[in-house]
Length: 366
Image (cartoon, rainbow, N blue to C red):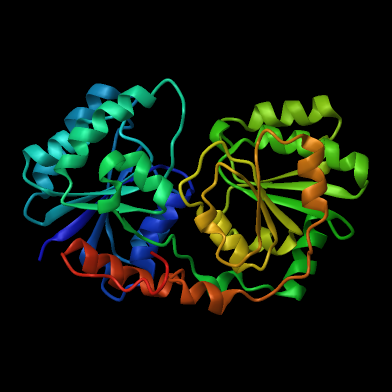
């Protein structure tokens, strides 16, 4: 039985990257099963990959088009025989080259959708590609029902839902750790609105700044804790200054240990423009946090009853009022989430079984 090549990880931290690496972290034989393709010349996960003894391969990013194409063809040709399956984890079918090369070189193709519809100028390209790329896939996977519809269209019913599982033990609430991190961040006496995600347009952190400004009019001790980095950071800092709330926003930066800043939060906010099944909301529920998310996020993610959904069309004042009204008493959701299949300890065996024609045991998730 050949190994599975996972395509593709980006250079920084991300939900898809965490999902892909959990297959390695929580398996006794992960390094014998999986290899990883990384778009770029580095990865923040290099220490993790080396620690578990996994193969990983760098190729130039898509913006370096010709280098990317040449490297991709050589890599797929080189690995043929050692690997027999390419496991594509994607948010949209905008770039057909990897799928064409995988098909031409005889790999088994698995498609896993990690996002729901994104209405932008690239949508017609995605819609055109999905009918023929989808037909090449021997297995269709998705993190949620909306994500399945986005990637597979009329064939979405063929997709198997795969939980975005996390290490639930890491996220268990700890009062001592909470006080420690709040002291470190200067948030001891604050009501902390928290957010974890790449600082990028689809995550809509600019709206979070507007919500914070509205919340400050209701409650002076409100702060915003942004965990992540990305191309929008400079713009967000400038907007915070323009709104007069710079001192109320903590830019925590990127971290692989999101459970640490989550201890400091009182409410988790996710006003995303589009999401498949956000890992961060699983983590936040694992940490016992009340969550307020945009209606663009699938309701399937609300496994504990702790997630409130609001349309993005609602006013900043409504968002602020909803966030501030949440019950901030933490509770232990571990067993509830585990019963739904969201413990990373169970992930690899189920996915490996699916990849090789078997039936996974997701309990009552899908």
